Image (cartoon, rainbow, N blue to C red; front, side):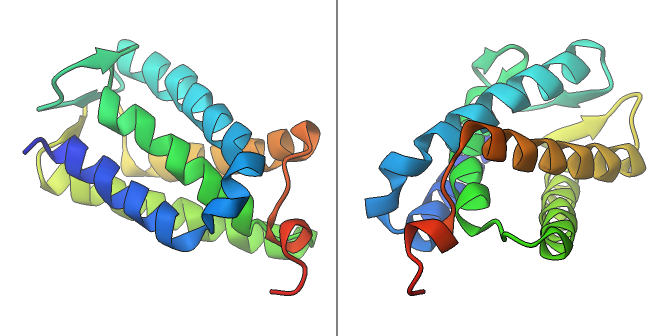
Length: 153
């Protein structure tokens, strides 16, 4: 089985377990925004040969389709759990950036991804910027979060 398909399935299962389905109708926009953002950023960087996806099969904008779709699930989880306080948001961005950076390292070790004109330092910096951008975008779009969807939890 394709490694990117496994990546998609794992992130899909995590999203299904982490975010109650009753909230997905209010969060799907976050998933779509995340997939479009990753298509724009990673698709551009891949076309500039900063990095390369290997063993990927079908692609959209240079990105393996399962990788691209996985950001729908990631966007839902990221939007749902985002905190309201600015200090907590900074820690949240840093935490998610580190998790994504670790996933990238794993994909490199598995031979599914390789840097061409890129480094892991570039990756962590763009992850931080990307997660900050998504927080601002979610606020601007008025996408709900756990505290406002389910105040009792």
